[in-house]
Length: 478
Image 1 (spheres, rainbow, N blue to C red):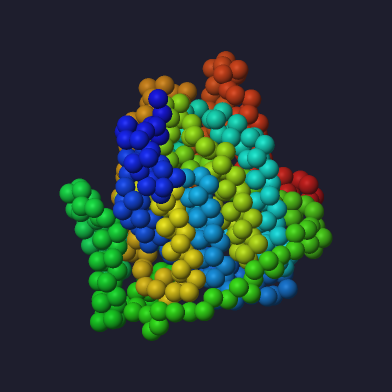
Image 2 (tube, rainbow, N blue to C red):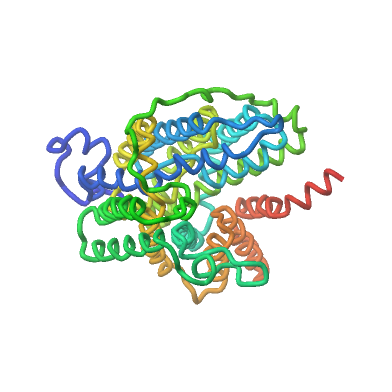
């Protein structure tokens, strides 16, 4: 019996159309909880509306052209909203989508230096088309189902560590090391300092206290309270704006801003191959597909497992629809004028509030669309107010480690590699790839070659090429 089957005998006729469509009662949730989860997810990942434009907008393409921040903000919010609503209506899962932070650097730093922005966005659209084909043919689902359950659990644990690390780094608690010293430190120089870190600490302690006491909306309440505190402190104290990160907590001068859709459908599908050359464009496209393919896979299973939506075999009912929507979202993101949209790990914050259905995604998506007109409000919540949610949810996702047989080294070692590399390399894709390669090699070394699904061998070889892409480029280019 799967965890998604109805635990109640209440006839459908006694339930609202909304309840029946999203199966809210079947998943032991309520409309208010789903709405609260949707708001929480939006608040936790709302920073993407500002962060992505800052990354892409700071880079010039091969012709020296930079994109408008206003247009990028509109494109980011619009594609996130449309993609997330689509996931809620079609996939019926509490997963929010936005421009993938694994894809954004590829577009900005691998594609743009060799081609124009429309050509770079064209490659993003092509990536989405390829992922849709893989999902529609069932190949993507086959690959996912071929992965051992232990590694799927490890993916969830790794994502938990990854998002906790994101929260700690973005809040200033963990800093980058100096040359010759440790790679990471407590704070920027081995010490915690500055009001932004204080805001994070207060937010984390408040969130933990409310959550442990099972206060409804604990995460959302904490974010709201600490955001107000941050605005007050920032207005009376002398704080360097860069200390806050992408968002400085200041009361907005206005609440409305007209959207600018100037980047919409401004794409050149195949021009990148002519401008940059087949090899360069091919490598960029390969990297985009691989990143988009596995980033979403890991996040979908990690978050849905936390929501109790996987069955006893570790499979996800309706995964084909979910993965197809994810591919369509990549197309939407590229066509809107930005990086392709993919599932965000911050969806776990809504799950932490009790979200279990697609209604949460519809709410989150609606808020993203509303943010197109109210972008000044998105600039109020600093990352230090949202980061505690990432740490808390990361801790909750770590509990999936109990499902891994740590006495069996054939799965324990690959699981550890998967978990460790996600936060250490800041990439879900790297963790998944290294774990699969380790699993296949260890099984083969034990003489159990045939216990490894043939698709796992194929994917492992693809990942081997991914990790060695620099050497491959040198060989083919030389």
